[in-house]
Amino acid sequence: MVLKKIFPKLSSWLNYYYTFTSVFHYPQKKVIKRGYLVRFTAEEESVLELCAYSFNYDVDYSRGYRQKEIFVVTLKNISFLGNSGAIIVNNKVVVESVFDQLRLTKSPAFRSPAKMQQQQKRGVFSSIMHLPWAASSNYHWFLDCLPRLMSLLQEPARPMELIVPKNIPAYQLETLKFFLADRPEIKLVYIGKQEKWELEEFIMPSFINNHYSGYLPPDIVEPIRKKIWEGYKVIPEDKPKRIFISRQKASKRQILNEVELFAVAKQHGFELIFAEDLTYQQQVQLFYNAEYIIGAHGAGLTNTLFSKKAAVLELHPSDIVKSHYFMLCKGLGFAYQYLLGSKSDENQSFSIEVEAFRVMLGKLLVKEN
Image 1 (cartoon, rainbow, N blue to C red):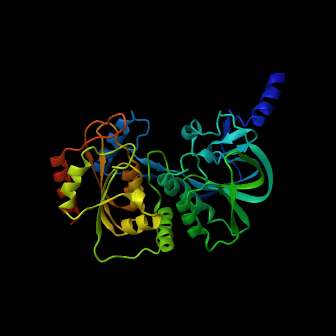
Image 2: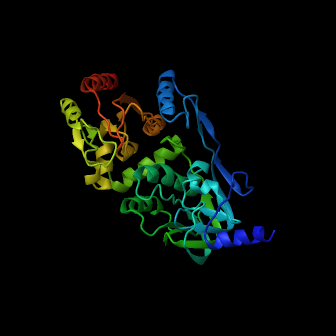
Image 3: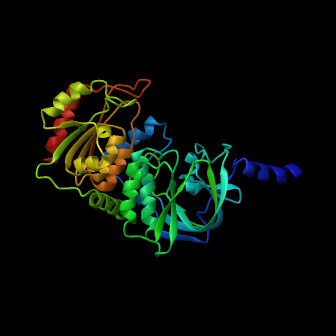
């Protein structure tokens, strides 16, 4: 009995949170949009079946995709962890603050003791932080974090402080400010990874997307696209771009015979791009005018989000087929094709049969013309 009383206090002091709770049924929850089922054609179901099989049906959208309910919930007297963006209520991690139970198990907020400096803060706070996933990933920033902001911005205007990491990447801070330019009542405040803030009031926006999925509802994704286009001042070009995303400089998921594949694509007017060598403004400008995009699964394909209208050919190893960008295209109404290559090696790199690529590329170009 004594241990039951002492252990929670000791674990809190060590920032070791070993249980979790949900706010889904909290009376303070405000529903912005009810969940709904996204259905697929037979051809789309076959793509998703292949993706599900790759991961032993850990996630299977081939029978339908459930779009989450979108909500915000107001919480009182919570702890906010700078190492993750997790919220603690009554010494329990709020599972919706770290995405869901699967990511909870991988979060530094859960069952991972940490040395953290406790600070008391007054006022109304919110956050769209999601660490470590969005620490540098453009996919997790644009598809996990920024959509949550869209929910928050639907709240009545009131003074609020939005918590972001002290080391937030420049492109994330830049794009975030695009959305806050006309909301002066929302101020940015910066938290360190070893800080824990005790907050009187916190407004938590729910995550909107799901695992292995870049799908976002049209009324969420379109305002994001338009705000980024406006912020970066994209310019329409008379001649659309055809883009082949290189992964030669990547540490994993390389296309081992990329040079041979690009030689084929070049004959059809494709240009080779290294997204990591471009500023984010340059990336958005480039993809905005793209009509065709070819690439292996990776961060570069995230920029499909900023294409005005494009068709995508994604290259996969035969044993690792992921549905993230298929689902992104589904939400955007973009044409999507895929091509399987060899099995992946220890770095998830693989090769694609050149003639199969030539045939698939020809079908893509004919189908869209």
